[in-house]
Length: 209
Image (cartoon, rainbow, N blue to C red; front, side):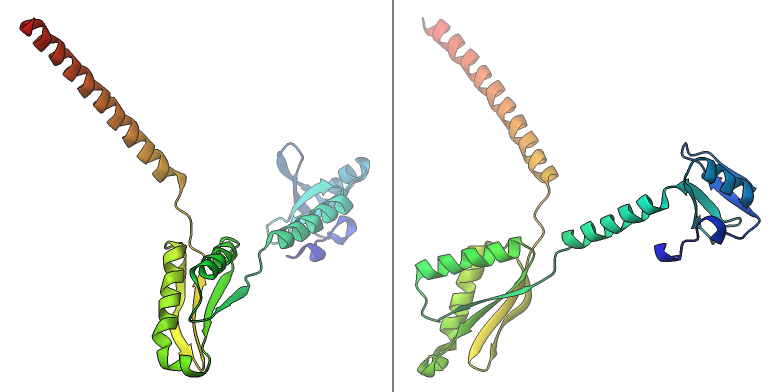
């Protein structure tokens, strides 16, 4: 049941309810008793689970409860990221400096969780050499170092060649910890080996002396 449909106080017309108190204790009492308890505390009796048998109620400040719930909804909406499709356009004869610059922009957009459409625009006779555009897109992918998901592979659309990329999940920390553990183990083994070699060297020197 939606919050706006919650019944409070005298709107609750069943004979008995299951009252959940602040300390977590609960019990079945008459609705009239529950209303009197709420009234004595200067609070409201709120039906939180009308589908239960008997319905479940709590004693609380309904105005405050409603305000806090509305605030949670507003905050959750603020945190939601709207997925956007960003577009980066390039020429088939783009130089390395510009390619690096635009590739960094693509990385930034992907890091924000956006999809990115990378488009190569061909002019005039450039349409006879669409392989140049494909090379540019391949160079972009190489600069992204695999940190993307290919939603739409490179394809021609009229005078344009484009591909669509989306962000890729980052590897978790456990993998890094495993690598560190192995590295540390390798260092210990190397130190032990060096110690043994030093001992042998000392023994050889002693014999030769």
